[in-house]
Amino acid sequence: MSYPADVGAPETTGTPDVLTSYRRAGQASASAVTVSERPESNAAAFFDVDNTIMRGSSLFHLAVGLAKRKYFNITEISGFARKQLKFVLSGSEDLEDMASATEAALSFVENRSVHELQDLAEQIFDAEMVDKLIPGTLALAQGHLDAGQQVWLVTATPQELASVIAKRLGLTGALGTVAQSRGGIYTGKLDGPPLHGLAKAEAVRALAVAEDLDLAECSAYSDSVNDVPMLSIVGSPTAVNPDPELRAHAIANDWKIRDFRRRARIKPYVAPVASGAAGIAVGVASGYVLGQLRGRR
Image (cartoon, rainbow, N blue to C red; front, side, top):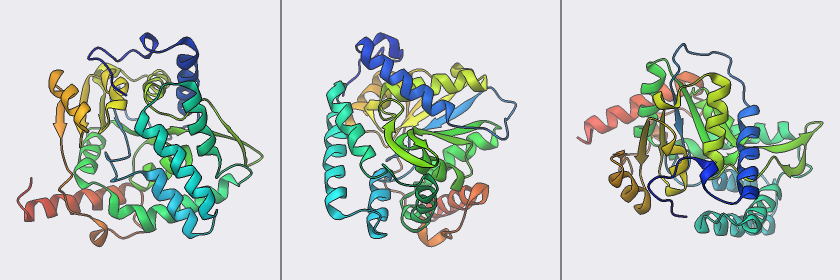
């Protein structure tokens, strides 16, 4: 997917049906979160997850972890991976492609327990995702926390996994794809399409209204050109580990660019049980020390 330089207002791009679906997904994601402590600042920072906070696809890491725990079989994970890969690589706005991606996302949660998936997501993050965190991006997030700002993850990953990642890193919360549930069991339906592209911008807009945030004072970070709509609606957009299209867009629009792809892994220096503010503090400290030792900061 490629966006022109003036993209940023979702209502100006796409067909009415697509835009309605995106708004529904964004509003559902924003409605699914709660904030226990609200900083006085009206500014916040929004971070994409995959290849921004974490190397690789968090959803794929979750799927592999679930497969290892025999949550589903190889046939199911293969079908899921094929559909997700097609959707992500094409970046299609076509409703049929989005429906296919939705079907794939639902294939491994329908009739499953929400509580069970949340517990497994915590185990999988601690065991398989900690070593994929990117210290440089964690340091950026910590800087916003230190400034008294809310810090949110914004991702197409399921809300449950996104919330686990945010909790483990001591962040404010997460906006993710919302799967419907009834009586603690997933129904097999989503509230709109996956939180992708324009839907992320809609989720951020909805959250800004709910939390009384001034988007002109907010920041956003992503690696993908698909997130240009989200990056464009804040006052301080930054391309992190950008793909070629986003790098070109960032240069053309005088956005900041940060690249942490050569930073060291942090798993040997972070206990898997680290959580909350302590988790991100250890991760940031490890990244800073390693960077100093290697002369990369």
